[in-house]
Length: 521
Image 1 (cartoon, rainbow, N blue to C red):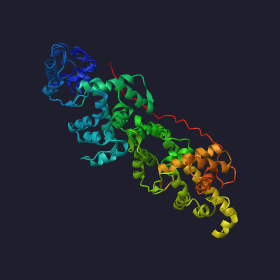
Image 2 (image 1 turned 45 degrees about the horizontal axis):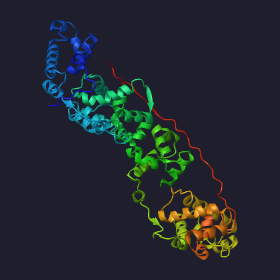
Image 3 (image 1 turned 135 degrees about the horizontal axis):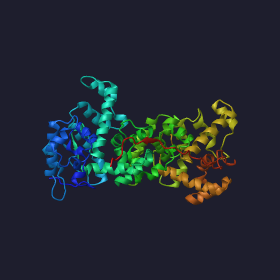
Image 4 (image 1 turned 180 degrees about the vertical axis):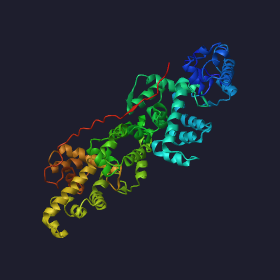
């Protein structure tokens, strides 16, 4: 027998008369001044029958249920709710009482499913299963539910039923008000909702981040646990299954984006993600890192900015979250999900391999992306060559059937693009996956470049020392490295020296109103 005492349990007489499950007559009795079991006390049937709309059947049910509750209460005031509900023929939900906040939240779907199973009205069951339990993207519309009903119902009628149902659930959970709701909620389950209601007692409206943080603190759970059940939590708290924009976006996000393992991921620049133009638009709008984008989605501001498809952005963040493990982001899993081949195809285990193959790898990269019509050929004939081997702009133009200024313009474009990709690591539009070890050699070369100032020869000499190679070996790759770092072939001053800081845009959080989610004491 389950004889759990609800946290903060009062004396039997302090319980509201709603626990007697008298349906619509409960409100009549309350209006007549009978609000608790103590108010009923030892009043005789004649006194109760003097109340308008209260008949003998109601008095008999009240007396019978009151006696059943007393019989289910032991000498210490512990109520056996299972025995009481079995006696009066009322289902007791949930079947398993949560021992902590994590168990409470993870059990919400099962609780709502069990509630749907005992509903006599099939429309209410459908609302619970296909709206209250579901995230916004998976919910059935009011029209869909109405059309499937027999007989069919209007959208407005389904909405009215939904609102009434959510009010009844909240009333039962918070105030033991069970008018029209043919179930009883175990106090050990209601306890968690009442903790939340107490914490929100003086709050009229709240932003999404604060709302999630508050419930996580009240229930002693990670924020990700709250987010995972955000749809039913919000439906019960607000009485509305249709969330505000920020909450709707948050409900669509993978909860793993809010775990401890995601901290490094949230600091990741969006331009590193394979989101193509959407990443550029986000960065241009001031949403520089993944955390900015998540906050923008939660506040609803991202939708108002009309940067691009919110669904596309959300789906990609969820794809990224699916690649999280205990050590952070599994980039190999991410590469597999975005389905990109690796370049270079062969891993290079030494700097000698890197410098020997660098010009060909860069040429392959340019051929795959076509930053301009002749980019790969310009690089092969001119940009990747040392000063003695390099053709002039005019000579390259003659070979490619165009003019020197056109060659110069395309060379500027290809070098700027390579700098964005290989130095700034802006991978958003890349059609290949650059090998991590290969990029690491670029990082070492960049450190040497920073120490060399504007001196190409010093850069090449220092690189040879760092990688323990001859100057001749390094000369195969040094012109390409220098050109990408500076924006010019070797012998010209650097173009990319200035560092421009970008201010992030502060996101004003979206908010919800907490209508009706109050404890009545």
